[in-house]
Image (tube, rainbow over all chains, first blue to last red; front, side):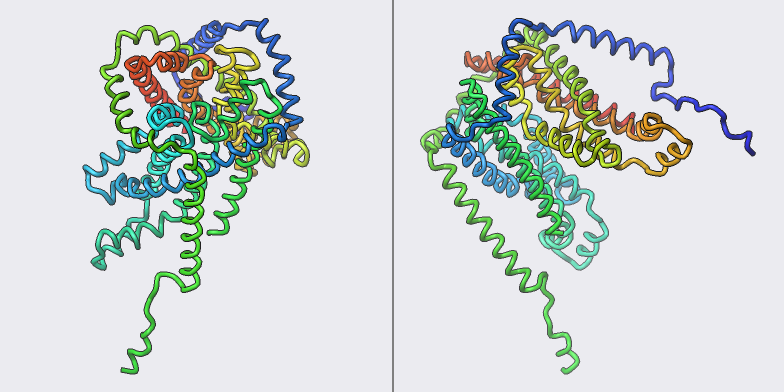
Length: 267
Length: 270
């Protein structure tokens, strides 16, 4: 019996079983990496000059200056927070019907395709690109940002919620249907109770993401704290920039802990 | 009659208290939303908003037809974009691995001191978008590919680190114990007990992040960090909307291809 155990450890099987293909893949990866490294052009003098700025940034991050630009920071923060909340609410409100429409087990075929394509468009365009277009249409300011984030929320929430609705326990839906329930009653009594916890969790998660994104779209003029940050960096005020970044990190941490607490409370 | 009286209670969906609570919650949420809306739109110029459909139609008419002859010029920046994403992912993963081992409860060398530091690195990296990293790095090391690569790498640490440390915490304790029982050293436990268990997750996470990074690196050029975004911002600054269409279509195609590759690779791994 003892002899049946191997005495030496041997290497587990590889994913690519053909040895030649494996070597070719490894060689190809190595050549690609060499070529890719070759494309980086580094102006070392510029980097040397920049290092001093880098040190100033790190110093600014360690000794953030909340005071001298406080009014700008506060305005940006309020814009970001209001934008985040309103856009999440509108986004969730719009994405629920779209998610129901994009669930194969609830919607007829044409509706399903329309809703899925709305979700696909919203997901494949980045927030920043949408923001550029919306700023061009609606003018600078948080209104364009609000629309951008709402639109991005539809893609995110719509997809995850639709996938969730498709995965519900079909037996419960069947039981409700067997009582002669209408489509509306089916959604209300069979689907909604099953996906509600997930909808709440996803909405809170999206709130968190929307705040983070609101810090970015300000760079292209869509309002929020990103605009303040952009100005601070352009003016080399690294201590103010450090303060803004710390505020962003703080709010995101707060949102994360808050949402996990809230989710626990609701369950 | 008396028998029926027994069933006189009407079924309700929720208890009265839950209904009251829910009602109060919705009113509060609506009030909060209205209040936020008023603060947010205080400085909105509504004339621009009402004018938006006309603007949209105008931009739309300028965007079509796409100027396809612009496509060859985009191949260089596209190659740069892919390189930014790939090299940035590699750099990010290299930095994320030690952070993940420090952050995982079961492998952290000093749970009291190092673990909070590692968790802070993860949160900081995740809460700052790659575009903001790029903005900072362009100011520090100058415009170009390097700023983009470093931005993507710094941004990836948090994502890879978080998912990886969760994978490390979920490793099967019994396998590690079995290796410990043979008298293996710490390094041996790591390489024979933990690494084989997290390797599939590691590759899956890395490829997933690469796919996200392709998407993010397409816009880094807007702040001067190289790639196809530079062409995008140049075309927009010159109001060459028909070129913008071509760039957006190319970005879309790249994102779809990278998503397909990443899905294929992850399916092969798991």
